Structures are given as C-alpha cells and as structure tokens.
Length: 183
Image 1 (cartoon, rainbow, N blue to C red):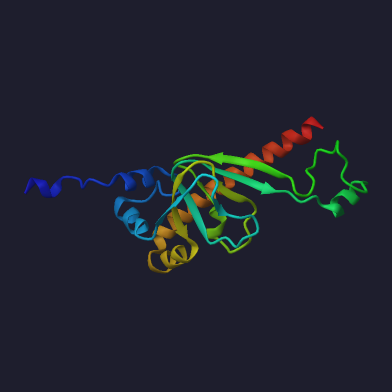
Image 2: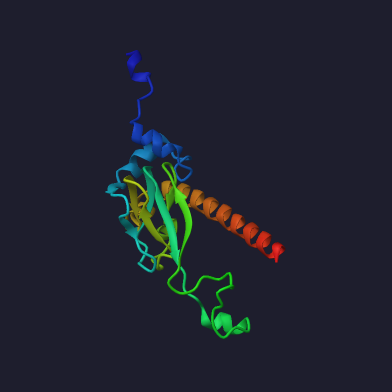
C-alpha cells in the first residue's frame, strides 16, 4: 500500500520539457497532456527548418543539436531615400539586397519560432540546422485546440510566452539604445 503514495517517475523527455521556461509552471499531469500534442522531427546539418517569409505554423524546441537563425536582409530603397541616399554605398553599415545576417545560434533547451503560436504571419528569419538536431514541434492548431480543451494549461503557456517575448523586446530596446548611443 505504501507504493501507492510514491511519486511517479517522469520520463527524461518530460523532465527536459519541464525545464524549459515555456512549460516550467505546468504540473506533471498538465505537462503530460501537452506532451501528447508535441511532435519530434530530426534535421540534418544544413537542412532548412523554415524559410524567411513562410507562414509560421509551429514553435520549435531544440532537444539536441544547434540551429542557426539568419535573416536575408533587403536593402530598403525608400528608407535610404529618406536618409538622403540614392543607392547603398559600400561604406554604409546597412546590408545590401542579397546579404544574409546571422541573428542567433541556439542550442539544446531553447526554442524559436514562438510567434507562430499567436498568428500565421510570415517568418521574419530563416532557421537552419547548424548540426544534426532533434526538434520538438508544437503546432499552432494543436495550441488552439489546447485553448479550447484545457484553457488553464494554455493560459500558463501563454503567460510564459508573453514573459519570454517581453524579455526579448527589452533586450532589443537596450541593444538599439546602445547602438544609437554609439552614433
């Protein structure tokens, strides 16, 4: 009878998921419900996970490996005209059309593409496997279904997502402020 009161052991995958900030506030039972909605995908080094401009359909959690996030920057002629430029100069710090820029390299335990849980806007960057990697995928349609069936769980995830996005916006604001300070 004592064995009835022993805590259930969770799988290594559930333990790993619980360590992610997105799922940290979920109980083991709630995490198990969410785990049933997650999909695993393997990518080879160099394989594109999603391209800039594609409709966002899922958030990706890196279980193993590394992912490179990069942008294919487009030189904005209208903005350059506002700056008093007729064409991009070689000495101009803005990238010209066709240049690519590394935004981040992410490792195991991080996630990316999180805005796709909120809407189907085009991706603002490309994600490519920097090494062979295993990703856990949470599709927006499954998240919307979770909102309908388990609103409390979805609200916990939404709150963590909002905190994550808020922190990212603060970091970006600080970086832009620091950049303008240097000019």
